[in-house]
Image (tube, rainbow, N blue to C red; front, side, top):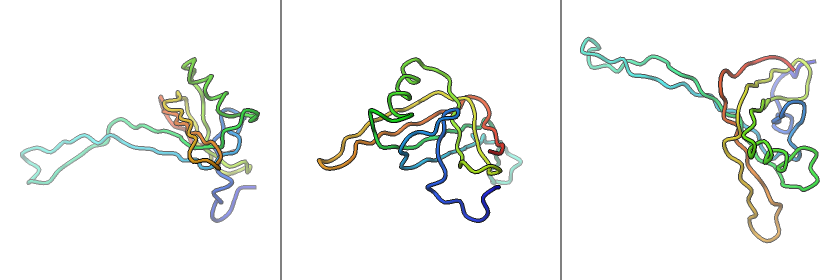
Length: 136
């Protein structure tokens, strides 16, 4: 049954295929459209634009663990091999919406801040082609 009302942040995760990234701290999806200017002498000094190419990315962060079910090491292998991958931005609730598409890992960063804190990492999947919407 689909979620009704507000979706709790703890339920929205990044999956790579069927695997949720282990111990996620945050997940985000970004979509943008390149707008190109069509202003001309007949525009009466008003700017005019039309939409052009669309782009998207899915990114997030997680706690670093050498024994993660699906974690930094798995993502590093995909990045190193420049493997196309399908990230999915979704909950695990049947009937909820999900977004996915083909991408490559554009960024993978590990950070060890402070003295008494968990090591974290960030990953950004940069879409190539369309981002599609479906249901879980």
